[in-house]
Image (cartoon, rainbow, N blue to C red):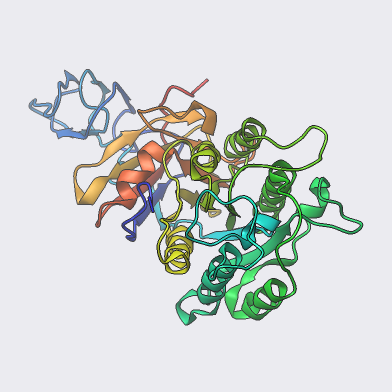
Length: 403
């Protein structure tokens, strides 16, 4: 099984600095910082140039976070996007937003294939145990019943649906069999829902995934301080009679659209069988960084581990403090990997604008309620103990997404 870059779970220390002054200095004249790069600190006269580190002069004090090529212009005083900056006159702690999970579970006929046999598409008359269905449901039941997971929010739905909902009805999949709730309240309902289902039917991947993403989006928008990701559990290629029929490219498009949306919804895939095809969906749904699928031995244990890792993975979403007047155009992000030097992360505008250089964006630029780090900026923090994020309010936002 590959766990992408989330194999090491750690706590991020989050410090938030925000202010109401609107300027970048409250003693002497205001100061302006421009450039890009690391943290520069020093003393200096009213005007000086910093290259990669120390600004030296006879009077005054200046702190800047924009390193190489940056120029400090202004009177004496302290300024710039830093936790000690005078433009930030209030300090508040924030925390990463927990990510709950919505499981979309494949119950197609091929889930009666042997769990350890990747090439099976039609189950044998005499079943070989454990079947894929038995392995998957054993893992899910183990996960939801574990006392350590009691506070994780989990919901579930199955595909293909039958009856009046119909296997191609997206709205049916957006209506959960068990709504997301802390496992202390939902575990029994999830186990009962699993017991009420058995493998049968086709694999309408696109309607099921789209409905799951729609539900996760609605949940995230309507549940302040929480977010939801989709865990798509399936055993291979799409197969249905929908119009148009499900396909990997259409599923990739659905996952990509959700990831690039506002709010951004991630798709994790736990797969058996044709995992190469499923991997395309996972990569599209996590910004090309994180993907999951189990090995062919001891599948139940592997699946339980994958669910635990996904649910426990540190999110890259941060609450915007509601205290005071926060101007979204005066927000900056700094990160420290493993307790090292703070470096600035630029605003990129949307998830679609994330590149190898990383960045951050709002859930809704017009009325933001949360900040999200691009995977390329977040994953090094998740993988390194002692990392921290600082969200600073009061100085003009920097980054390629600034308009």
